[in-house]
Length: 300
View 1 (cartoon, rainbow, N blue to C red):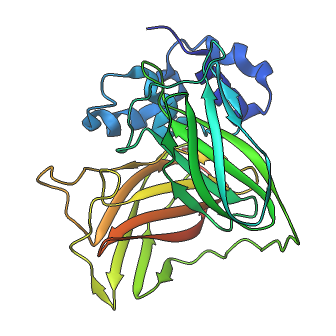
View 2 (spheres, rainbow, N blue to C red; view 1 turned 120 degrees about the vertical axis):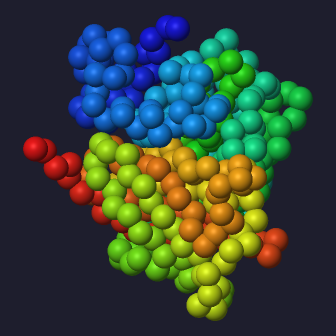
């Protein structure tokens, strides 16, 4: 297996902010030397990951979504200027040869996940575009004035999973919102979702989201994207995109359909993050959102 230069990029940017740090990391050859890669063992149960040592970037060890192009793959939007309202977004993923990629391997039940949020972290949307034969993806987003970022999370056939990001501008009177405060419980309709677990920089953390409806535990959550929930974490300040994995999956004989949904996430640095949980119940997908603070690692 070749050592992917892309991983050097992730780690270098995360720690040093400058690609000059590549040299430090290429020497590692493999990622065990990094200490915080102990998270691998958590993922060996995931089948799809156990065979791929090169999924370390996907397992939460380097944030994604900070670049429009990586490892030869480029996110190419047809337009980056929009008016407010429901708008059709079209884009391509150009491969190393410059032509649009048309072969993708599904992850979490879909060939591509598109995550969109305004840069002040309002208006979060997680949608699944459709792909045509020419390699163009199409989907609708609900846009408010301001600068938005959207992320394409995908796995080209035969390649590592990647998350690429691009900014788009939406014309109109921009009304920026302050960051939501840290609160353990989020309410939507007659549901309350409570978050327990603490993020610590550089260490895999188990996060539990507990779903209640009208004060009673929900025990019949419906599978959504091959899990009982889908969690996206974005770093406040640069919207770095963290890969998060659910523990277990529906139908494995041991994962309950609520009220608890368990995820493993690794925060690359201390500070604030926004977490967005999509969960399905009664045929409707709802999103709960949280602000959390990742602590500094405890050094013995």
